[in-house]
Each structure stands twice: as structure tokens, then as C-alpha cells.
Image (cartoon, rainbow, N blue to C red):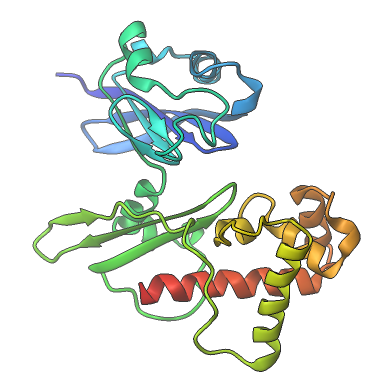
Length: 275
């Protein structure tokens, strides 16, 4: 009987990949993180190269672990990880052919799950009851069952929902919300509605968006989205990077940009709730 197991966990996004060596204590049913780190995926030439760099961080080869779990952006079709099903390599700098790599290197049991799935699942565990893990925005009482939604804004806009039923059954959604279109808010004041219309006109007139290109929430909230919003207020800022605009926001020099970004984030949340 094996008293402990070694699990290698990936957190693979469109920009970077974090990794951890986790030890599972079978007697106490506890998980312990033994080693962790991260690497930008564009510093690697291939998935095989990325895997090798992660092995250097953990000090353990994938084939030597008892299991490998990969939380990743996009959908896994059993062979490849796809950010955009219509274009297999879109979003990643090289093909993410996990099935072939696992077979070549004789990996142990492995699975690829949506990267927000662990976040949703964690909210139904004791993790939620530790104050150091959670920052509450209000005093609302949390339903131990019902639906939970994880929403994140980064290189992309990700969303995952899950429901824990009273009989112990669990349902996990398969939805992606970042690519839905930005609609006019059903209820807002005149000044914000006019700003919304002017921003859309600006994005079209400056060719930031093509005439027939749809405006989605990702194009305003993720990646270069905050640059597009900031350029609306500062026309000389179109060539700034997201990091540069982010620094201006944090330093308090782009308050209108921050307020507008937050307004569209709120519009996304409201749209998700209506959906």
C-alpha cells in the first residue's frame, strides 16, 4: 500500500505556465506542495521543451510522478489543447499535443481540465473557510450548495460555473464567456451610455477594430483591451503596452481608464448573470 503519491500539477495559461510538485498523504488525506515555480511559455520552443523546463523546476520527471494534472485555458479534445477550435494553434505559440507527448515519454495517468475548474471546485471545500484565502467584497451569506461562478481577466477572459447539489452530485459547466459581444447596457445613465457609444465609434474610426470585426468583452478587458480603452482618453497612447498602461492605472494617473474598465467588467458580470 502506497502511503504517499507525487503529483505534478500544471497551471497553463496563454502567457505563462506555473507548476507544482504536490505530495498526497494517503493516511491523512492531505496535500502538501513540495516545490513550485513558473515560466513564460514563449521562452520555450515546443511543448516538449516546456515540459522539460517544468521538470527542472520540480526536480522530478513527468514519467516518474504518480499522476500529472494540467489545468489549462481552452478545451482538450483528447489529443490537443485548443484555445480556438476553429484554429488549432491560435493563442499558443506551438501545438499543445499532450496525448502524443505523454505516449512518447511514458507519462503516468494524466488529465487536462479547464483551468478554472479547480477554482470553482475549491469554493465547495474547506479552502473557502480560511480567511487568508478569501477577500470578501460584501457580507452576504454563502449558500453551501447552489451555483458558483469563477470569472477571471488576464490574457483572456475566462469563466466556469459549477453546482453542488444537496445529494452530493456535482455539475461543472463547459461555457466560455469572453468571446460574447458587448451589448448596450439595459439600464444606465445618459453620460455613461454616450461614453459607451463614443468609445465604439472611436475604435471603428481609428481602425483599432475593423469595420466588420465584432466587439467582444475580451477585446476590452483582456490582453491589449486596457490599452484600447486608455487610447480613447489619450490618443497618443495607442502604442503603449498593457504593462505601461497598467502602471499608470496603479499610480493613479489614469482614473478615467480604470473607471471605464471597471464599468465594462461590471457589464460583463451583469450579462453573465442575465445569461
